[in-house]
Length: 204
Image 1 (tube, helix red, strand yellow):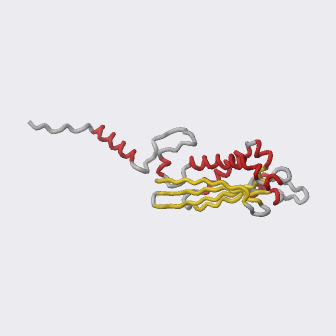
Image 2: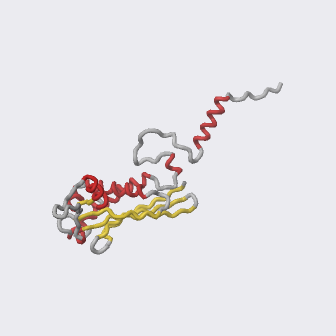
Image 3: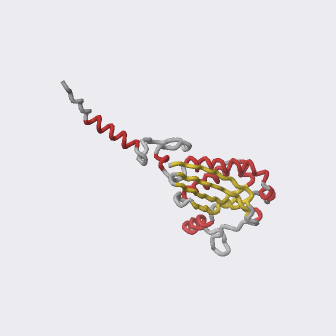
């Protein structure tokens, strides 16, 4: 006697379908809640943008190396008092990564340096002029009592440095290689006095 195989229950078939869909590339991660910033989620692995963990690691690396090199940079040693560090431009040539991602790195680097006693003794950090002027105008802050205008002040070029970021991407099908770099540039001579880079390659 031939018996037909029993059909699997409908609930079991539906469950198997949901599992298959969850495993398809591009689906949202099943991870929920807070995770460590040095971990990569399942959802992030499908993105062709540079992974956030790489941005975090590089923004840790730059201030550590800069602090270690402080004593070896003649221009910083020769500065009268503390050198002035101005946040410069972000040169984003990746085409797919928003500049705000790299701005976050820049701010994170500055914060790490501000919280280092070694760097704070040798450097002073200045906020972008445009941001301060907008705030001063909004709140009615006047610092030049003679003219009644807000003046953020000028900085001696010999003792001032730009912190600049450059970011590039090389793409081949589903492979992206990112090159990220921060440089400290002497305002008086445009000489690069410090440079640190970070390379990361991703398959998506």
